[in-house]
Image 1 (cartoon, rainbow, N blue to C red):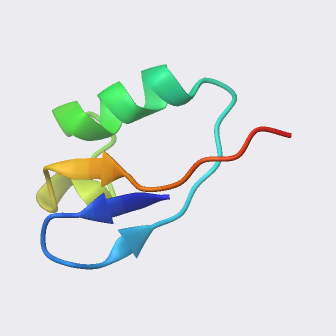
Image 2 (image 1 turned 90 degrees about the vertical axis):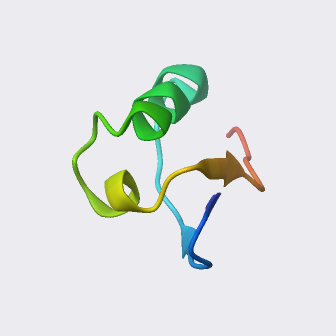
Length: 47
């Protein structure tokens, strides 16, 4: 779960958290978090 700079949280899934977080941080995803940077990880779970 990511917390966006403008307040909302974002939930997603990935098999490589480091890569995906870097993509969100760079705005490379072009989606929901691209205009809400910086984002920070507030929770993750591996299963």
